[in-house]
Image (tube, rainbow, N blue to C red; front, side, top):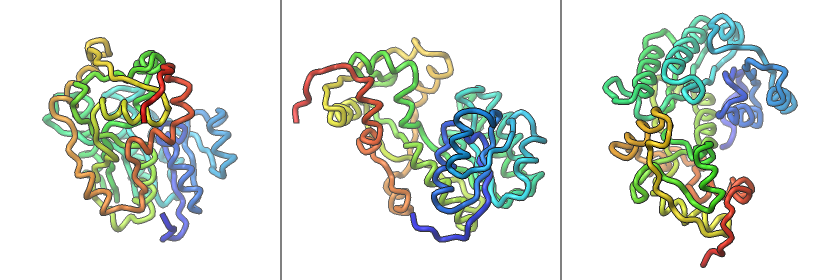
Length: 298
């Protein structure tokens, strides 16, 4: 992306979390960044300071601390916290962030929610995300809601690691069922774009997906990238925690339906990753995990 706006001051809430890459992208593009974290003395916070960010304390359970951190910024970026706090925490934290952004009179609130959020959803997580989005829309707060699908980075979640070490790609859904996925780098790039173009994305909800493929295709791509043969392994979702079990059942039964082609055509500056391209960016990490030594036939 080429720089098209004047430098902005941006608060990134949860800056040491999964979407902390937003801090790096904003700094690289000349913006002033406050990185909000509960652990300002952590190694991750120190790294952000080395990059040029100002680290500030803030707790998603403390509206006053978020409000204080957000005063005077042009934009606030935040994401849901379901991966560490569950649906109830997701809703509580999302509401707190929106209330703090409104109280601090932030010029633009960019929130990463999730595609599939719906009042009628069978998943408590998607119900919680819907309620957060509705709360954001109810406030006098300029906002943009990003709605990513399943993260590619979930490949490295703990329940997958033993299988990967054995040269297998586990799939809790049918191995021939298509699954839309998004790279965190693409979400971070889109968040940066929305922050830089608040008028263009005002009051919009943007579903985000980078690629769509099934587990067989994913294993073939991984085999090409790491140079070792990986095979798919159908696993039972019942071996996973209930929340994950319900999520994978929904992904197989309903799934996401983002128009990836239109997204890529409309926003080519994001530099979208296809799955194999994303795997290539993770080659070192994959090489240390995938233990099968059978050569790949090219």
